[in-house]
Length: 170
Image 1 (tube, rainbow, N blue to C red):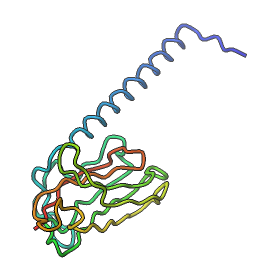
Image 2 (image 1 turned 30 degrees about the vertical axis):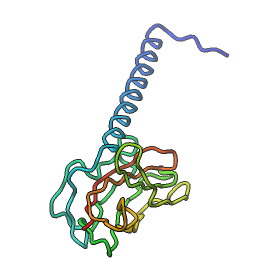
Image 3 (image 1 turned 60 degrees about the vertical axis):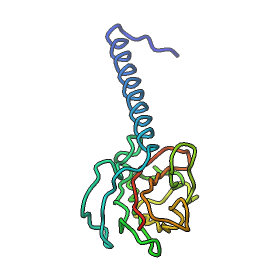
């Protein structure tokens, strides 16, 4: 019924469990730090053309959260900057099977000021490319004067931040 472990097996088991807990705690704190970064005001942006080619990169934009490393890839939003009468696209590539459950995208305008601009309720999302069309007037804080720099935050349905980046509406 019960296995009796030798002293060496106990030490090995203790080491593995300790390592597992340390990695888990580290990943959790890395994710929390990433999410704190996501909920900062927009600052700079990755400039892209209408085909998605990067013209100038902002190293803080469109990074992948620690929880989703190796499971999701993202191409920077394009075109960026975007005219208010145009459309911007954000491409996510889901590489992990059943790794993303639902998708919600928010425009963040500062503390306690956030608006959902997109939702995909599929649970889980299919592997492969998910291309998300976004309307700059939905992103803008005020549609009457939409010009500005806006933080976009992408989360799964469990409210885990996947990625974030900044978009300039002209």
